[in-house]
Length: 256
Image (cartoon, rainbow, N blue to C red; front, side, top):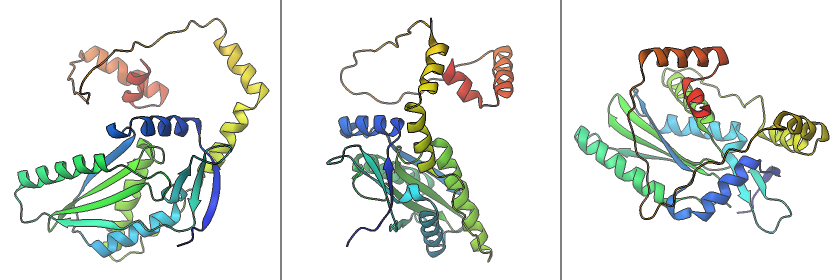
């Protein structure tokens, strides 16, 4: 079927970095994110599919693919329409532990599946029915189209519209007021701006370079969790700094 293109514009510098590393280390599923959320509502596959369809129509990023070859500058292409089917599975006959194992097995297999960057959508959706009153909503996507904040907004929008439609309301979905193409234009405008370059040159003048350590890791790598106890006074100070800066504590810790 012939592709119908709605829009096209360059990648942000962050996107370029993500795609470089994800293509370079494809076997490690770099920048392939999976977000799983528990929804305490009955699963109606038709209603959920209708909500996802409306989300795709409303948000260009969910209709975006990448063109990296045979162009003077890598582009992101927004398709006019994209089909994003919701995969639904019924796990109600399983025990809670079996449900957890099944979902973890799916996450592992999905992580290895990867994405074809040349084709939209760069997201997959799966709904797993756990009981008559609960299901999990899993979004599998490339990090170059969604980040943590936008995923939170997307999931909130999906669940809100879904619950409204289950109760008989319209559950309308509005398109974003700010477009990513506008951000791209501003980023490239800033990069080409002599005034912007002079600003950063002055701000960084005299600053010392801090090199981040690199470890020569051999063999298998992965994510490890380490619990750290923070003294109450230090925790209160961190929360105070975060409140003053208007950011989450996580952001303060990342900056530190």
